[in-house]
Image (cartoon, rainbow, N blue to C red; front, top):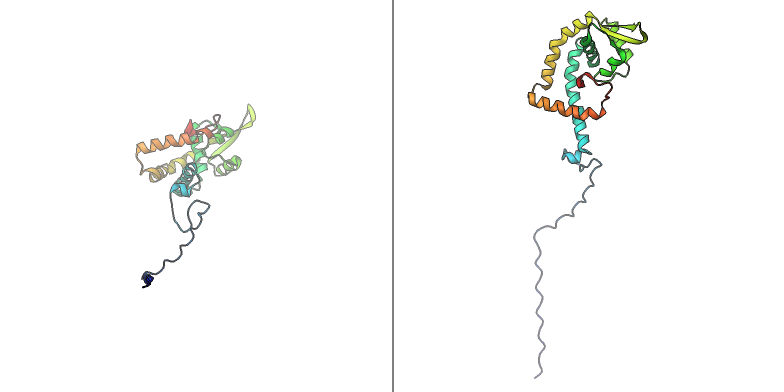
Length: 200
């Protein structure tokens, strides 16, 4: 009897999955030039700023802008700018003496691009006077008038209240620490020959 070849068993059908096929994944969008992926808000500091120095500077700038708004409200009531107020305060500090124009310009907190125009406006209002020194006609001395000192007295309380609104939420210790850090930050950029009055 001849041997029968084995009969091959039929292969089992492959079970089909009941789950739908997953859609193809979307390609990841490249990050923006600022480091933040498109569509995302916020992000960490390293993503939103180019450096820690930049983050610190922008925080200083924004803080100054917010605090200056409160200051402008006070000086606006008497038609002064913060720079004009600073000028009158410096002149009062040497009253009844006068201060040379160059010395005055060097001691201002914010350097005046046009010192002559600044003094012209204050002199027109009768808040200061100018005179040339007899020993040197090239030197112009500036002196605060009684009207100038009276104006400073008039707004003194409002200015103090403004400073309280600006920074009164911080403790004395925090303010001293902040002041020291700010001095360290600007120290390399200050002129040793003409420091502002806050650095004297």
